[in-house]
Amino acid sequence: MLTIKFSPVRSDEDQVTASWNSPIITVNSVDYDLSLLSDGATAVHPVLGDVSRVGDDYKLTLILYHGPNAPYSTRFPEDLVLESNGDVTIPIYNEEI
Image (cartoon, rainbow, N blue to C red):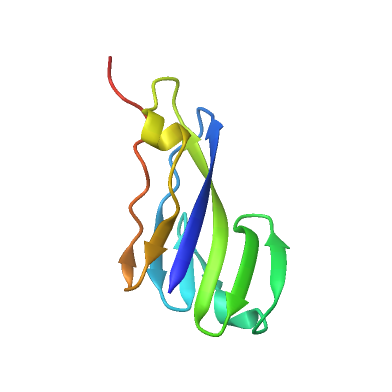
């Protein structure tokens, strides 16, 4: 299982893309093998933020870039819990006015 906490940041950067294929998370086309983190450990990673592992359960923090008209749900996102492999649903970057 993977729990993703989002850290919203107003930016003109492109929206993050991610997918999960346990224990590998791919962020913006770069693979990160979370199984390299020791069981019970926590680390700070430049892309994945605070990363922790307990058994096969992982937690990390992704920067969530958003535009000037991002909805409330993007500016104050809930944690995302993934129990199966696949694309990560990233909150909406911006709303058209």
